[in-house]
Length: 215
Image 1 (cartoon, one colour):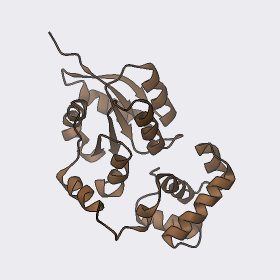
Image 2 (image 1 turned 60 degrees about the vertical axis):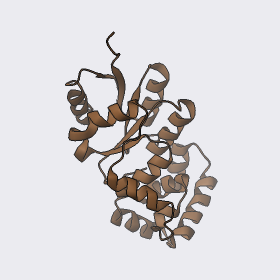
Image 3 (image 1 turned 45 degrees about the vertical axis):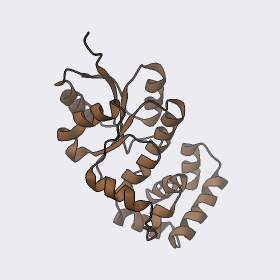
């Protein structure tokens, strides 16, 4: 009996990217793009309404932060594997996303060569990570000399990136569905942990470390 095709959700806010990935997957005989999404909220809606096997999630989309989207999928659909797709190298965000429950992390630069293999591997219940990232994950357990932003909690990391992108405390509070006082408290803790004095220095740090567009 013929094996059912792997039903995939492609989530990216750029239509051209989604079309390119869909075209790549259309060349296989065991994978089908079941649906697409352009925001975190759309991802959650599609996951709830469609019978999916794999989610390919862009790291940077409008609306609900991708890290929050990933965590919500893990909470409500723990057996649904998520492959995080990013334009940034693994050493920037991969460890954080894998610890949050992603089944794999793939850069867009290498997607053309590895996307199909990554989807098949996580569908079969395995993790998809490069040998270099495997080594980084192993050393992260013992590494005490972390970059300042790596000392932040996931929520603090999200708030930091949003502040660095120029959003106000009120805008961030609305986006994350919390009170402005909560965001202000996060901001204080972020500045203390990172030994930074103000938002201007925070933005400079984020730019220097390619963090601005990643939440």
